[in-house]
Amino acid sequence: MCTGRIDPQFVLKAFEKGADGVLILGCHPGDCHYREGNYNALRRFHLLKKMLDQFGIEDGRFRLDWVSASEAEKFVGVINDMVKKVKALGPLKPAPPLPLSKKKGRGDIQAEAHG
Amino acid sequence: MAKPKVAFYWCASCGGCEESIIDLAENILKVIEAVEFVIFPVAMDFKMKDVEALHDREIAVSFINGGIRTEEQEHMAKLLRKKSGIVVAYGACAHLGGTPGLANFFNRDMIFDYVYRKAPSVENPHNITPKPRTAVKQGDLTLPKFYDTVFTLDQVIDVDYYLPGCAPPPDLIMKAIEAILSGNLPPKGSVLAPDKSLCHTCKRKPTKPEKAIIKEIRRVHEVLLDPDRCFLDQGIICMGPATRDGCGERCINANMPCRGCFGSTSRVEDQGAKFLSALASVIDANDENEIRKITASIVDPAGVFYFYSLPASMLRRRRNIANE
Image 1: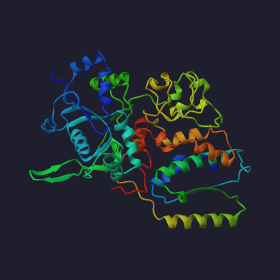
Image 2 (image 1 turned 90 degrees about the vertical axis):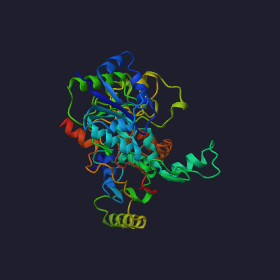
Image 3 (image 1 turned 60 degrees about the vertical axis):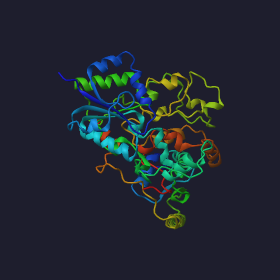
Image 4 (image 1 turned 180 degrees about the horizontal axis):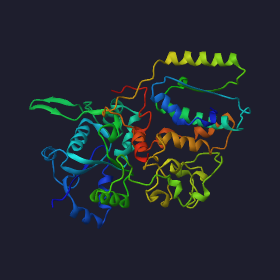
């Protein structure tokens, strides 16, 4: 998927489902098949990173980097570094369980209602 | 024929939802004529035991406003659920957590520490903070437990309908009451408001930016606002693109940007994330340093993007502090 298609909701969903880190890897600026997808991702990334910090999701848990298909060495380096940082941070603390056991998010109910 | 019984109850809220009933003006007489209130703390002297004495589902409809942040609120929500045929989450706080839900960026200890110790107007030499149980010589005094996290009403009980807004506007309230009284109800789980974004009906829509144009984010007190031009086009954060329509644009008409009290449309799960996405796409910068600079000019992104919806968001609360 083009990094420009990554909705911030995807990143939040990953953390909501228990991911301890989210790594987005995209094509280098200037290499975008759609011209500007990765610039869009870059703008969202910086704003989302600042916002995630307010949610107590530390710096090392969310990263955007550029790796092209031919950069095997860089790919390995970025992954290893990310894994090292997330391991050092440990598991992300979950939100408390919801009092209503049969969890029905608002989205689910509305999706039902609007079919 | 006996009038249908109605409950109007408040939890973690400000009382503005009670005011919204007064805003019905002369229509309030029609409501009073048609229903019998069984609990309405701001206006009438009924107690919890009066509700306990009712049969299960004897209340036709309970309108509950406010989020849930104490043991007592949770208990009352569950009691009203048991005694009611229909429960309506009334107003932004019951629907999404509302502004009291911003407390989810903190926890109980941090809140008590500020409110009972550090706030400039507080003098508390004996370091007294609320405790669920305090022994005095006459016996034990109790207070409801204060939670680390604010919950939306539907995270605590099953909710049938949502009436959005801070506070809900009179026309939507009357429509909802008429629908309930006539039994002409939409599918369970519906938000009783249109399912389009605010921009859809906003009179400033013709000037809404369609491409990246913002070089700087500004705050409302820093500029003289043009009353006809899209706020985003003026570099002002307006939650309109990620917010449900139906409020009558009270804020926009008063030349203030939308803060998102109606929540998102049904197609969006996380209002704040969706707005973040919309805002990032109108920022006019491709250079990383410039993007950082513009991002830095947004002082409190989470607080603005989730002004009304933090407890209903995907992450729900700040994670790196203690919470039970």
